[in-house]
Length: 332
Image (cartoon, rainbow, N blue to C red; front, side):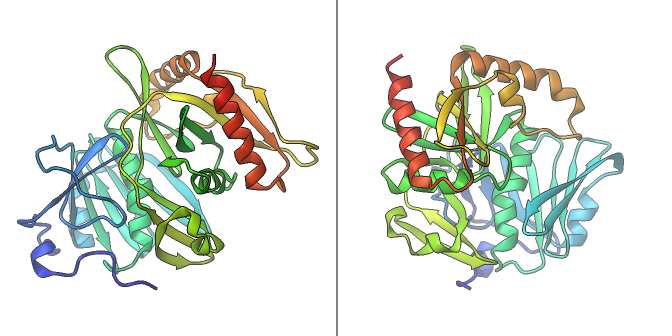
């Protein structure tokens, strides 16, 4: 286990008993939101403090987090993160959310995602920070009105290509292989989308962090820093600049089919193809139509394809297919 990932200096942390803000804060950008944080976020480079802040992030005691949450509504869900870990999400009657990861941590998210409180059992542990920089901040981005895809994405010379699949489909390993071959990471697990004033659907970059099988911690091609290794998974921070929002060149839906003789790229069935890999929540029933309309616009503006392969197909072979498909699409 590495050293604690949360700064331990008393000047850098809030008083958890009061949930008060510190004098010193750091500003970050991820998932299309700008965060003012009372503590350093692992693997992320701070940006200028003059940016318009859309989310404040603080540490607090669990009692403070639970007190901030209003009355629970009848809507709740359980998110499976893999490895037997679950997060329980409860929607408040006022639109706020309470997320609980067992005894490890609880989180409060204000109705519009403008405030996030974190109550970790161990502030120096990596586990709750992984949840924060994926599920929690992703939920805040959804509360801000963004839509999302279960997808990783990389920046190639031809443009940004998203690799979509449900959890465990292998998109992170494929993205890592592409990064090892010279691409830049755009997002590891979640790609958030927003329609601009010009009608174009743009994607927002995620944090430069990847969760990969532990063997990748020895792969020097990534050029990253291993933040944590636990349960056979390595949490790796890549050293790179924050990519700007961008229109997607393509969305490749990873379709693992046992017995596939040769990996191939097939036309997708859009926008239904995208709807199957979109982030859906029973806590947002009023967003279904808007989500479908945004995905329909995305399907008109970018290529959607199926990347069909046997589960045993090596990532290097799939990476070659992604690169060749990007070159072909860029010539259209």
